[in-house]
Amino acid sequence: MWGLCILPPFYRPDTREMFEKLIEFVTVHYVLSTLFVVLLALLFAHEARRGGRSVSTRELTALVNGEQGVVLDVRSKKEFGDGHIVDALNIPYDKLVSRMTELEKHKAKTILVVDAMGQHAGTACRELKKAGFEAAKLSGGMASWRGDNLPVVK
Image (cartoon, rainbow, N blue to C red; front, side, top):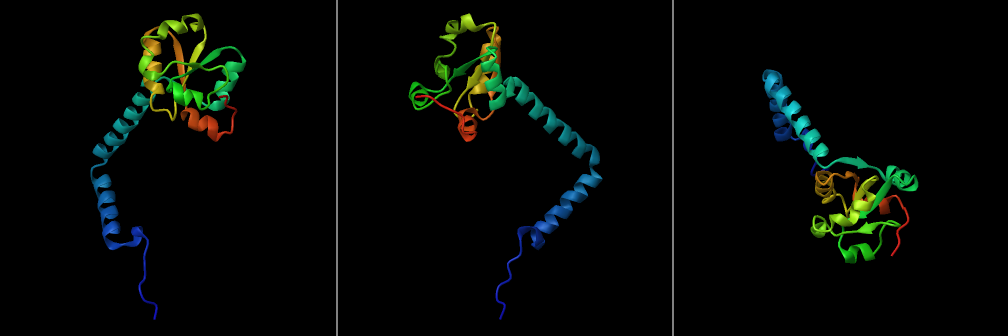
């Protein structure tokens, strides 16, 4: 009468057995397991630091309003035209190195790098830091800006 009984994956014997083996491995090889977790944490920390610090939409707004930061949008001209942060400068990511001299007048401020979703901002920050600028990236890019319902201009 009840037919087929569907259990969540955790209760399936094969998944439960694998989980038990993992627990057994971690308890027997606790030094290796600890070393793995530490190396993984160091890798995440290194990758996060390589691209510069991240700022939230609130921090970006505070820096710009306090005239301590300038927004640099590294998206394509078309994406920039579809909507961008007020007073943002647009230098597409692939032209950043060749057009970096345009930013010299803003060297005293933090360059706040914005891209679509955060995929190029870290690399752009690294290039800016090599050139002597102070740079930070908007965490989540324009997707987070729009997600917070903040204004864009076209």
